[in-house]
Image (cartoon, rainbow, N blue to C red):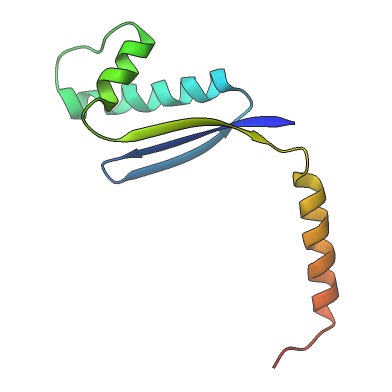
Length: 94
């Protein structure tokens, strides 16, 4: 199982989102750009082309990343962590 991770760092905003696909992550990025466009540029409307809009928004500040994450082993890692935690429940630490 794969997911797409969207990370946005922009003027104090730190956003991390997990999406089912790269397309959904890109839509999340566009929602962010559209929400913050007026604060950054004022009245000029944003470009209609999605790629141009994103490139223009991040040209002089902020960064974003859309990356694929493999979640295939996540379930096993969670199970292992639960087992480790169960073993520690009976141990008293000083």
